[in-house]
Length: 306
Image 1 (cartoon, rainbow, N blue to C red):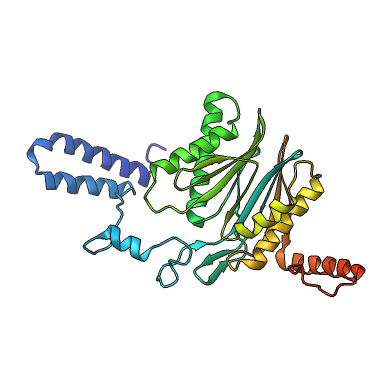
Image 2 (image 1 turned 180 degrees about the vertical axis):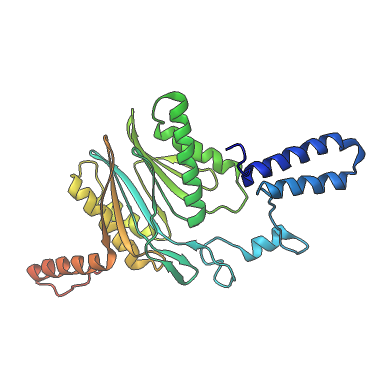
């Protein structure tokens, strides 16, 4: 092995070491421009060239971004770049835990970008987060929250509480207020105090409650939830309520649709109950409505009609 040819990595490291030594020795005899050029060359050799964010080449980049990259509903229809958003998510507490139900449609203006978005973020076996608003913002910052929760566990040798996890997310959002983030999430889980549910958005608003619905279809979901939610629901009744609320929202809201995903948060952690195509739910509920109307002498078969 003594006569073996040195590897490319060892040659590169030797070159870098030599260059670094020369740089130290020659610091006083070279101009700033020469030193920066040498530093850039070293970084390129290491494969870690400096990165920078480009701003729009206009007089007022901030005003230009606000005018051309709006994130509110109905504000980006004419934009060249339209953000992926539009959703219905909900969660509610009952005696047996918490039910989380979401749709799976992502829209970019009037265009349906995807029907298979996973809007429940599995932070850890005892924590779940939901996505509403900008898909990229929610996915990134809730993954970041998962990292912070894991670091807490490693430092403190115990699971983080739901209150603390939601506070971490709210603190992060507070640091980025006014930066154009679009995020409305629910953080839910089971800790030493039992099942807990929090709402958190991009303005760092943090609310504790028993029932939330977030997204463009939330008003329709609230109508179903307010009419039928109660604490003593059985597990099957609670799952059915979550499915029906999501279905009615997707039927009335063009920005919601796709698959209804339902999770159940229990003392032993969350479980995914199932996924149902909302088109199948429409015909299922239509048949139920028709059967009930037939028995009562009515004629309506539309599940949305009263």
